[in-house]
Length: 102
Image: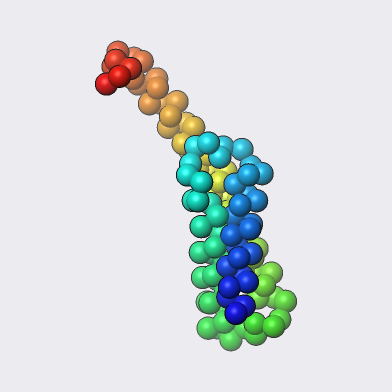
């Protein structure tokens, strides 16, 4: 049951990162929320396998902190890289004279 709650928390953190940070128009709607869900769930399962108690606060902080860090980091890096890539592609297409409809 706790895995469901931590997955939901990761999803909420991913949604918050998607809509609070710039560059959301450069990627799909579900990418960052799904990443938050996966990271939170994977960290939670890994920590329970290591023997961390599910009712202790540390496992919650580490799992949700990892989800937040992964969501924010990926959003910022991906937005910057995709903007640079689009700019480079536009420059290349304008330089070579490729028609707009091609």
